[in-house]
Image (cartoon, rainbow, N blue to C red; front, side, top):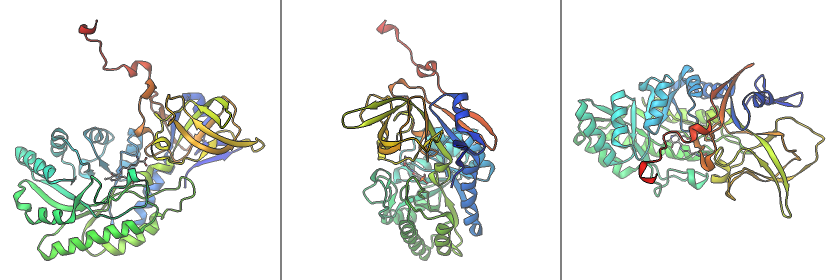
Length: 419
Ligand code: LLP
């Protein structure tokens, strides 16, 4: 579901023509639909309404201030993984009591900042981290609430780079160790272990691995209850898959229908931390064809956006649907690699894709680029990061300016000893 549709052969984001945005801001750029974004959040909220979970948007997927603010206004909390995300999240107006903080490598400084700010929960990933939180909290005479991230050792059928819950992954703590920690919780002064957390991977399109992991953790919580250890929170993570090509992911309602009966009546406050499900289909990446290069073995559409702007195809072989910004149904079609200007053979946005025969100067949109698009972009090849635009109805605004060449050298100096 999204609001990128054709009207009179022109691609629109809600009620604004994408071509018109390109004329105003230049290319390449990301364009987000407010309605698509917020409706996905609301869908999830409605599906789970009977158990009133806290839905913390995973801001690593999209951390633009306008995007965050739009979701926060609808009631979202945030799932963060760094001091930078804490800063961005709070600046966008998020109440720290709605922030959960995950990540295997939180530094002492990051922990201290977040403890002082009073985030709701830390999702703790190791005993050393727990000790560090305890030590810092003692310094401030605060008792910090934490959840332990359990590694449930389940296999999620997704790209190996984004699966997180197998025993060999770096994430989470194995159940026997979680049990030991809970049993000697009193030795960690100034921390209260109030919850458990799981996150099994990303872009998971079937319910089975989620259910398997939740079952495992609930069984463990039952065991702990028998030993007099009670939890307030159960964070079931993110990872819900979306449609990029022809996937048939579970809908929010289907997912909720499976999960709610498992957790209802147990008294846990449920936390969800989806990123892609909310932001993924709410954004497109718009790029312009610079050259059409006919090769002996392959034909290339060389575009002005590259792997530094949208790395998912290069990194995960990810598929993003391509729409011409202006449709021409009579145009002959052929097979192209869509490649960027970066000096790497891995710099492609699509491989062997049947497309209309684009001409130089024409625009294309890559769909499903609202999550892990801009946030994973870089300045590689000294390319300024692109603009981000948000559309709501007939209105649009640049919500992040295109970087300039001056931005590229910001903070750099030439020391006298090399002069
Ligand atoms: N919670 C935790 C602890 C996570 O590590 C993640 C994602 C999420 C929630 C949100 O997952 P989501 O609902 O968005 O699937 N760059 C990759 C995805 C990496 C996901 C990392 N963790 C991609 O472009 O596909």
